[in-house]
Image (cartoon, rainbow, N blue to C red; front, top):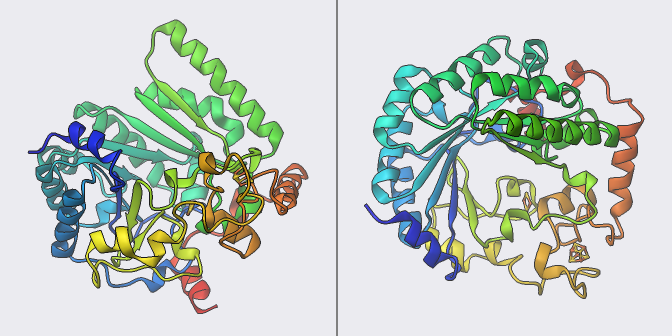
Length: 384
Ligand code: SF4
Ligand code: FES
């Protein structure tokens, strides 16, 4: 097996992809209203075969990728997951399973451990079972998540939980962190919902108000103090939603810089949301991964700064945030080349301010009014 740490160090200087996110499937037993999968996911039918994934992993590793996330949809739906993990391990990847825990049991955890899986991250919707059920579209999922979080820890993995925050659960953050503490979590990502895919469709019903956000940050701060006083090691990472920042993030560390996603049908994307952009992405079924990464029009389109419009083009900060997120720019302005409207220097920043005002006015409706991710809706969006 190759030394994984050394390879990561070398690649940081060579322009090779470090991170591969393998979206094994768009299938999922849950229906989260903030799912980042494309609205028309049901139109994607021909998933890569086991042999195609194995070949792709070898190509990515040969290019120097070191971090590998298995996600979806729900990656546990794929019965070949253990086989893919074993091969990834043999190739020298550091592997992470990003899961809702549906389809997980003790036997499968043992099989994944045996295959060499390094890390498991389980998502939680809420502390309140009713809110969790409403968001996930399943009354049974919450209990399984709790049971599997404990089982993952018992199997010797660090327990890493991810909680997507939005206006319907953010006020319960105190109870959410208490639940994570009681479960024995080692790290908790409190990730405010990023507004892509189904989350963008449900934006008005998901975006918290500033008041909610500030209260949640204060709650997180209090818990950090309390945990430190108890000598309890549970990292709390609080991720602020883009809409409450004045500068955008350097999305994915820069387009085609360190990260690539392979979608279930083999399309290779610079980020997990890029399918919504008005461009064509090459497939590993048609071209070698190396050629896609280095030579394709899609991956080169937003590298560097020559593509930028004003105000980014002449901005001193353009190499720090690379003009922000292309998917967000397109979703909000219809122009994928535009400055991300999150930036207060953008001529379209008023769109962000309007969304914040909408969140303040409290007309967001109930959690039950959110549009769940589902196949039926997906087909409708597919036709439109
Ligand atoms: Fe970044 Fe463009 Fe805003 Fe400058 S104008 S801070 S480069 S998004
Ligand atoms: Fe696609 Fe930011 S999510 S570029």
